[in-house]
Picture 1 (spheres, rainbow, N blue to C red):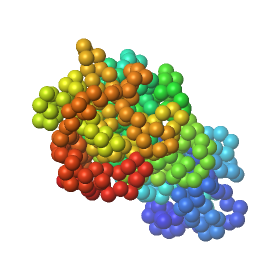
Picture 2 (cartoon, rainbow, N blue to C red; picture 1 turned 45 degrees about the horizontal axis):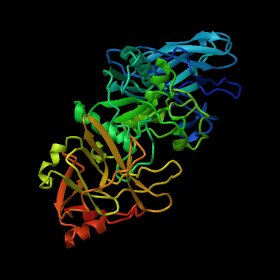
Picture 3 (cartoon, rainbow, N blue to C red; picture 1 turned 30 degrees about the vertical axis):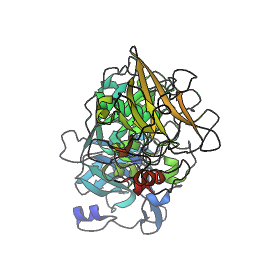
Length: 504
């Protein structure tokens, strides 16, 4: 396409320059509104290579803008460097819509205002005309991508405390960052949600590893489940919870799995400024809304060495490939990434299990050790495992899966106070250590099952869709059916267990 714009306007090709003809390099303009992706030697395949003036190898940079005809479309500033130009009037930028004059910005630095172009991709040519009798020579090329606008909505949910964030200020910064991909945000800051029951250990968010069927650590899934239970959630919107991060969990600023609707910003890790929160939100939304991977994973470049939004260098730049991902997201094949329904199965309203009560009002479940546990009528909340990680002691690490359908943790309520208990295992092996209290050092002691053996117990089967999120089953653990089901429940280290046995 080189010189094609000039040919359309003049019916002839510009002349071929000699070996001393100048060559321009396009660079960032400090006042640009949309995106610019300059040639990066470390990622040569991202930039088409052409022969400029039939002999000079040239890598073409990328420019984004809002397409012609869109209500808010306007000209954007472009900058380039070129040596040996005595008069800026000898330069012009040419597109299929016309030629645009160039102004000098400084020594060897020039700028041009590029009006909106038709939606799609065009090649803009920088032309140099030495004098009135000379034909133009192409001294630079720029790929221009003109996009139709995109809009997304994010809800910011302060958890457990008041919030200083103003929706307008967060929106302004998010829009500035995502303007590179011609995208704007609707931002809604929700009233503070005074709920700490999601925090099982009452010390902030713990990021122990997720189970195979879910992308969220248990406490974060608990937070999501509780919010969905008490609030109306729009499936087309995104939600960012502001929660503290537990001590010893590192220096992460946020968490949001790729292709997911819910994310977290860790309020005790971020400076109390709009800039810090907005940039962290932009990064996490890159994961969840557009499936961006971390830049070092995507490119192989060293972590923290670039200004890309998805690096840890503090930058906010988006590359051309990321502009494209906004409209054509990458395929994410991670197990558990498909929908929100793979989250931990919760029954915050114990009345949902009324049909499964024992005669005296107690409830019987299966523990991760595949034994029975019977809980009293004061039971107020129940959470079944969907392949979740155990709650590990501080010195433990690794991925140890709770058997699917077994009792992961529960709450007992007396005189208005709830005490949470969660399944624990011993370090170094799969031995079930009982249900530890989140409020004290005392573990739960079952005083019912050994005095009155139950023949009926409950197990939960996770469902992908539609709601409800799970089905509950009752059966006799002494029967062949139950023994087969229990064999099908994977032990904590058996990731390849026969999951299909759980399908009734």
